[in-house]
Image 1 (cartoon, rainbow, N blue to C red):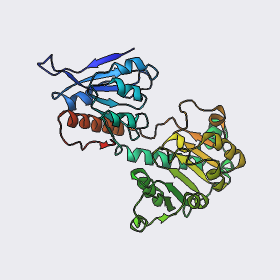
Image 2 (spheres, helix red, strand yellow; image 1 turned 120 degrees about the vertical axis):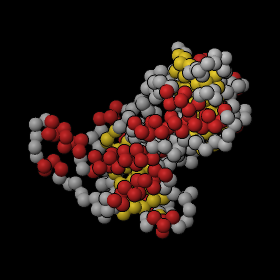
Image 3 (cartoon, rainbow, N blue to C red; image 1 turned 60 degrees about the horizontal axis):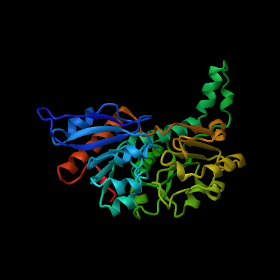
Length: 337
């Protein structure tokens, strides 16, 4: 079912719809277009389309030249073949794996994304997942709720100061995580072959030349890289086998960075000792073994969220759309193609 919520410009009824906000009817992000209309009007009108991810026919009916796209809806090659009016898409997300970039390029459609929102939230969530796992908070809370009061359930918990936090991908979020880990008194190491030589000196962190070196030496490893053909299953059976038996693996980036099938065997083999995941390959369909595994802590792809971060994302995406329809330089988002 195609649901439309059109914003109108005061005193005008014939202004063409300029921007489509495309979201999913279930698990969507935008209820009202208050932020979008306040920014984009009166330059253009805004229209909301709630489209089921599996209903391609409704997607192909979109006629607006500019789209703000939420990540539950994907744009494939067939969309770009049919959407002759489409000029630009602003992905309201850090990632843009749900858009066929090659097809967009062939049809001359510009694609933008918003990688610079919610940095604090994802870094905070990464830290929270690790601390909850390292301090055994889920088990301790369940113990107390069950009527227990025995501190010895925490036996084996180790001091964090002096332990090594390994960061894979020292971008915006990786840097924010590094700052938080250092505040705990932890050593920080990272692997990022695309980061500038010498950044480790400026930040007083340690560079690891290879991923293998980082995995072998870290007490906690957190992933902060984009997902592409180079990073798909970046952490597979071989990489997991390198990790310490007491290590924690935290992923708040993209689910397919970790081979979930290999992860099951690795946990059974005792390396790593614990995983904390906000994103999982093939989410939201999760394997039963992962949901019930005693050494896995899960959250439902919520690391990005706070009241402020969602408002920031919507605001940046709307400003980018306004810049596009105004033919101004786009500063609120980053161009992909």
